[in-house]
Image 1 (cartoon, rainbow, N blue to C red):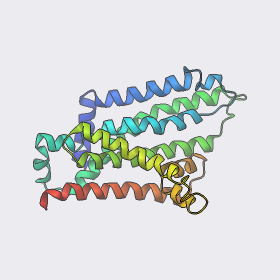
Image 2: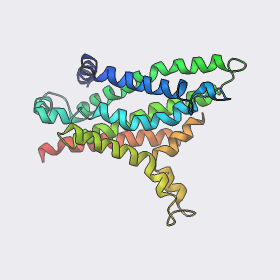
Image 3: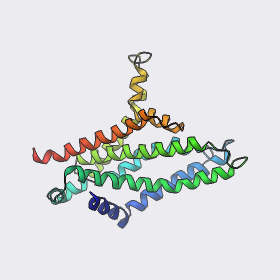
Image 4: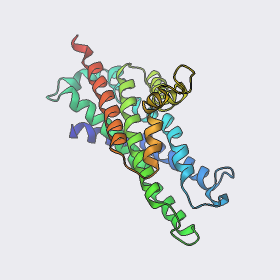
Length: 243
């Protein structure tokens, strides 16, 4: 697993992929938080990073599929998947190595946003007038969200040998798992009956829960379960070659 992880990381940063992903995320978040008037922290009356945590999931829906679309689709297209699976490693190790590499790249892109917290901390009146617990919880929520979207993206990449198809499919799945259950819970057939259960099936519900600063075991188990489910589905998809 470790050699695959290192190979993927080297691939990201030996080409423009890694730099484009990190740069695009930081520039977009910087513009939204500090420049655009409708979202700028400088125009707000509160020392808060709520804009970052509200917009980042939407950016992740497109950014993470762009990272994961090549993981297995490119291997299939070039024929190197056959060389990879003949090595003395299991399908689980292949999938885990590629997933961890994608997750590490997104986590690396999130790391500089800690400067936003330091800036807002100092801009508060008085300095430090910011909900540090809620902010830390939101950062943890973003990491779990990145893990879930990375697992979904790797799964989508395992279904096809076309990177564009993998990107579109991963974007749709991320959108569906994140937002669709919230919309479904408002349908008359569910509203007032099982709407809370339907809503709890979506990522948005658990992400918002963690963002309040309270780490509930149910939210953590949910994210781990989603990641494990899609990685397991990826292993099954990868194993189709033996059928």
